[in-house]
Image (cartoon, rainbow, N blue to C red; front, side, top):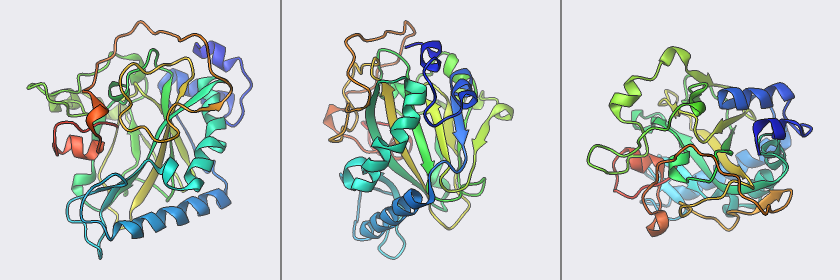
Length: 299
């Protein structure tokens, strides 16, 4: 569906101005959207997983563990597939957030994936400039991620930052000069980003961000000794069909969460870079950008 077609449907959660901002700038941002009871439940569940990670000595199918992780000082970079790890995460993703997703996807919404990223007081936790769609190309670019801050987030603890309007620019090459996948812009390309135009999306716990899969984004390192959890859920319009393997399909991947399946795919003529074949395994963008192996997918 085109933006005009989507905007012709009544808004469910977002305001019309917020929907229009998303299509014009490639992102929108809403403070304190998530009700306190839902937020408290998600926070409690998340703290339980952090405690579980204390027993881990390295990354695996559930946790992405950072360097220096110990039982006394956990360094959990990511909880993988939270949508299938606990019913509270899936209830949130298929409930309130699915209604938000319909405001920018149109009435028929497909679920793609989720992840729960953490920021810790460590310079290595910077997520460098990148775009998401090169990780999982689709027939069109109505692919987006909704982030929810589970803790108050300001410039001290690594907020998500976006370059407004970059979703309309050509996509970047996220391979290095030797042909290795890095999942990020080269240093040369990153140096050209006009930082005076960058928007840092801060907000109290319960605030959400929405960014298009073409939008350039990054997050600086945290300067706080408290972890900053950001719950991320990715959706697509149901007429956007993936044409490469899913990086890390959960049991809910490609589930219709609003509306119904569609009979016709919509095709955008703009090209998209093809990622490596993810069917052999998955870790995280932290590992990819740190060079921890050569087959590390997802943004």
